[in-house]
Image (cartoon, rainbow, N blue to C red; front, side):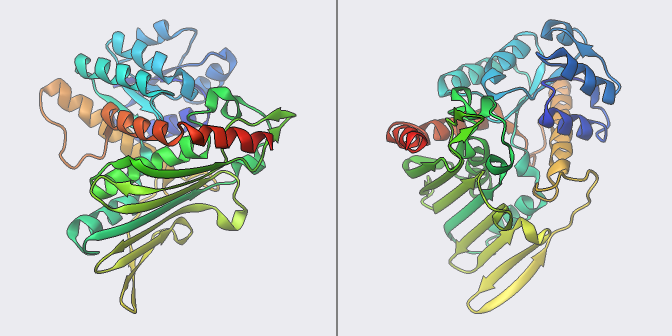
Length: 357
């Protein structure tokens, strides 16, 4: 599968590193609005840099969209209209209206249009999902997920992510929380009921390079899933080093589960006063960057493999594997609807007041 990359930033690099390890996925070119960046990345991986997307499409069967969030919709539409399979980084777009349009177009095309919810492929999530589905924890009563980073403290340069362009998708809720929204759906086979949610957004680093930051770097969401399970989510880009990582707590009527990425491949189960320790296997092929969840780099490899398999199945006229974790544009649309509602109305006013206070 001759695969082009649109965008030449850090996520594009992660996809290209992964592609080198997936048979049948061939990096066939890079396009970026900054030609020098495209050329540098393309040279690193031994493929051409293209001066336009039209030129790129002539040489590829499929594209990975790894460009800034506000460009996803246009590139996804363009790729589908050119008859190319798509793997689009999250979030799919910046508005629900755009996501609905792109999803309808993708479904009409019959192409394999996938979403980059790569955290679905963490070994921890796979293992915990199996425990939930097996009934090991009993009926699920409550879940709490946290995603804490320190990038708002360590990145001093003002970029599009801090501006109005990123308002709906690049704050801690839009950037990190969208993964957790999708993860809850994946773990418990039930979407978030966004009408039940209460949200707090906060800006702890209000300025960069003399410009007002327009996105949250901390968010708290409390609500329930459509199946009645209650949950809390916490996302942060302004956490201190000792707080960083991904955490998950699940309370069932039989057992409770606790996991933190700092424990790597270990999770803990509690039954009454008895603690059990469990581990999951990891066969690491690609080293993950410092500060990332262990196994992060390999999630891109697993995701590309399943995207490749889905394209192969489509071309052969067969169904893709029933246990595939590959997210489709419909999953992206569902998460976009939740995200937009959480960021709507009074929550935006609360964010604006916290920026100017």
